[in-house]
Length: 196
View: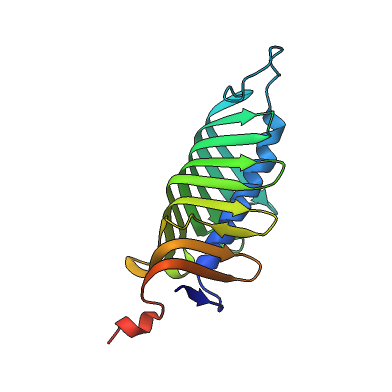
């Protein structure tokens, strides 16, 4: 059994912002590739490495997003960027307030496909509705515009400190604005049920 929800929900902005962060990192990383090694490089040796990365994005003169990473490695052969200790913050364009934030222990971005994988502790927090998402693995498939976790990976969705929904195996379709948790679904789909 799974849980579906087709109405607008605060966590949809979390996933959209994560996608936005992914695309910005991909665009910024490719212009910083170091010179190639004349000896055939092994696949596990990066072509370029970066430490203590901080980047700020502006729209119409206002700070729209900031991301940082402890380190990053670029692999030219498969156009892959591996990032350690990724954090990001997105800002509201109207008043400059924080709209969402997130972090992941590790992220891998694939330039050619636009896909991304997040692992370790993955946490996304939306200021809207105080909604958050936690997991240990999350992948993004650009061609489908879908976020998903493996079937055996636990997902926690909270509002404030209260569990809204949990289970194993999340599928979130950005275009269709719906999600599906595949197994072990529990929590409170309707928050008002718990208030009495």
